[in-house]
Length: 331
Image (cartoon, rainbow, N blue to C red; front, top):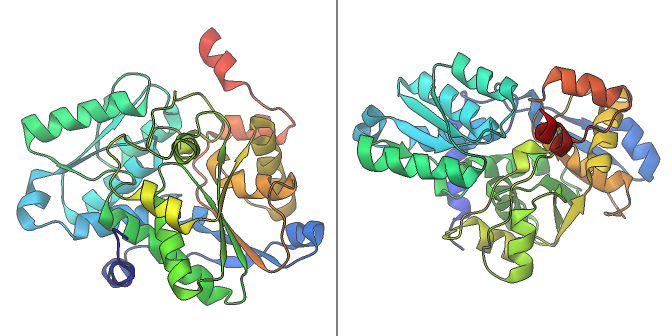
């Protein structure tokens, strides 16, 4: 194991008072539908609207003074950039965020509002990462990757501590999956505290890089495609150091959900639970609604973020399932 449980405990101490301990509550409609107690961990209520603030804050606070003075840089599909910009501003550190053209405009504007410098490069996370590599080499910035980074993973793992503290009888946990920083950290915390717990990663069908890598037995490149779960886009890195092995070793199953499944889950979260979710945060609900994950005991669904374009949200809750690929091609 490349990350130790003690690092999660240290991260909890380090970020205390700088991030919210988000609420966890009974999902009344979801529990009634499934016939077992289901709770939702409302991490979309976090200060920056997503879980990413935990890992970014831990990583920035772990820097030595010289690194902090030089500034930080990262590639992001939006939420990590927003979190790193917020953490850097709190620490008085320069932040540069590199993103592809696929990142929604509302997420770009939110990062700019936090004082970060924005570099829009190419049409994929891999393109954005090349710009990060250039800035590290030429400008001396310190990279804080969105997922494959020890302090980032440990920061995200603090969610696992909170989830079990609030629901110690939990038998199954569903966690959104992209590059694996969130799932790896949460899984390490959960597996350490309760080895018998069932841990499910959930991601979208369109461009599921970690699932493809697990199927191949090694990190592989996957085309990044437009999806309602845009925060789950991007590859896991062909030189992945941490998250691939951790997800492979700690997670019981990875399931995929369709664009229609995600849209239906966003609608359900809004009308039945009163929560505004971005597509990436709704994938756990989608997996339960479609029966791709069945429950035999108490469960917790991690809702990871709310940073959705509100016009897109309005269209979805009005009954539409937007075809983002077609809209990009004709836009």
